[in-house]
Image (cartoon, rainbow, N blue to C red; front, side, top):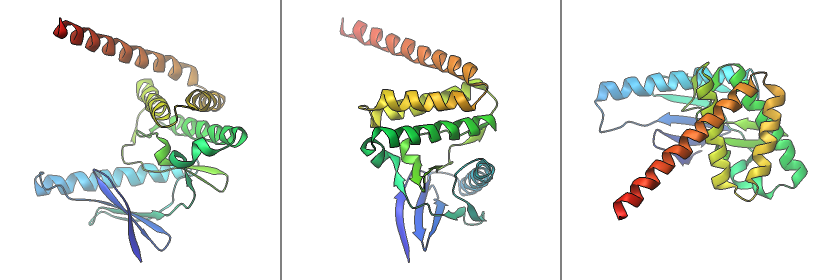
Length: 214
């Protein structure tokens, strides 16, 4: 029995007998050939990165890739999506989860993988492991900037979704990241630059808005 369990801008997710099917949907506003090419290349790239990441830590196993239908069949991970459960954990359990998240990110970055969408909606706690899912925006990069932005997006996501525990969660994740990634100091210095640029940009926008009112 098939059941649609998610729908995004690029794909639909279908659960079928313990298997998750990710199918990229057609975009009517795009040229048909270009649309098929984009969906095919994105399906291929995502599956390759997932297969690489699966050798590092807990990522759903790819079972089948169908480029004709732009589908990826993978194992369905049954567990607690952190976006729903993270704030409900006691401090000790949350600390364990944060440690695993930091380890996972360190392993990705050490292998030059940028997840691109590090939110707790894309993390599942199952059998004492934290699975990362949805590699649709992932790519390969050695750049410190890209790794820093990966962390910046996670920080923003935590602050938005888990604001009550944000400081504790992020500090523990970064502590684990530093313990497991030799180049973490450089990436965290770059993260500070990324955040400073964001604050500077926000100040400029604020000034413009004030000038308009005057």
